[in-house]
Amino acid sequence: MVAQIPKGVYTMKAKRAIIKHNAVLYRKATKKVKSMMLDELAEILHMNRQYLASCLRKTGRVVVRKGNVAVVSDLSPKSLSRRGRKKVYGPDVVEALKRIWPLTGYASSKHLVAFIRLNHDVLFSHPEFNDISAKTKALLLKVSASTADRLLKPYRDKTKLRKRH
Image 1: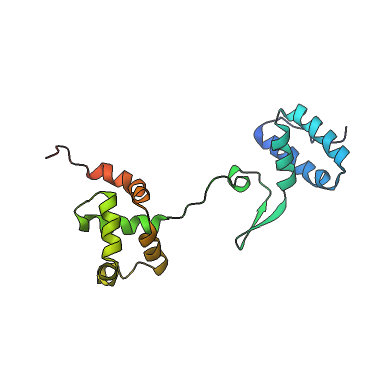
Image 2: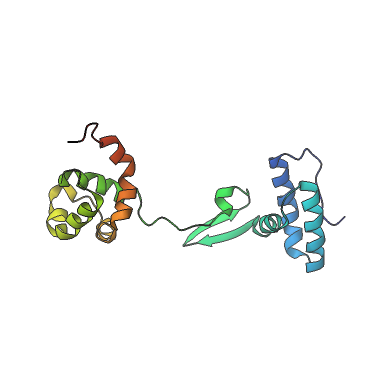
């Protein structure tokens, strides 16, 4: 047997300990030994080979993401997963939209975006909106109607009229 497995019960915590224990050996091994390790660990731990190889490669390594240093040693899904698009519009943009939306009389998102783009100089010079950063102002001018609609959906449902006139 090539892989070294510490004694214990195979809960998820134990599986992570086994992976952490074998990660250094896996990274230093040759291709043939890596293949044998993956075969044995996949059989013992009942895990997918590709996922197991990914965990063994990433465990204990230092990863730099946009200036942030993260040590991936705990194998949490948050530290391993980087899939999907990153969010462009954060909570500061949502708060600004929530504050501007009542000024338009709770207009539709198309009218809201048009209002922001047409009146941005007057709107952002108002003392009530002095706390909005330049980055947020640029994002507000760039936001599409469908994105504004998606960002305001939880708040739109709360302010919806019961009887429509």
